[in-house]
Image (cartoon, rainbow, N blue to C red):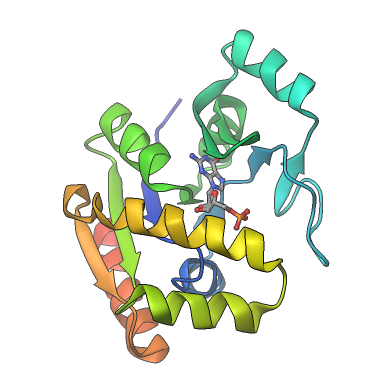
Length: 190
Ligand code: 5GP
């Protein structure tokens, strides 16, 4: 099978990762989103099979045992996320490049497995306080869950320098433009 390229977007929850990811997907038709498996509940408008494959913990553990994941992490206590090997293969078979929105450890793990055909980008905002503001505005989680995400963010920031690029999202329009430049150069010019 011909391997396509992989764009790995990581960074704290609230950093603008999903917005930037959706922007890239809307602009580059050759790029396909990698739908991950998760054990968390679906949020308001999320669709099973598109945003995530929502599965039970039992099913997730079964898939781990059957070696169905290219990578997986317990991103929050008892909440698992993972990239299915089948998802990667399906997209490459369709001649697509793949965009991953995954956590820092998962992102670095994939980069290690596919060092040559992947581009890893860490998205950051200027401060943890800014992240808190964004997560509160998003209004999809309790205060307890927001605190959990902020603690995770502090830990994740420490890994930023292990990525190919660090993209500072202060102005969303600029960040989208920079992401677009990086990704199209990697996909089309190399
Ligand atoms: P959310 O619950 O906000 O959709 O995602 C929480 C975190 O899990 C985000 O940092 C997201 O990038 C990460 N994530 C989503 N899918 C995967 C995956 O397949 N593997 C890993 N390691 N992390 C993932």
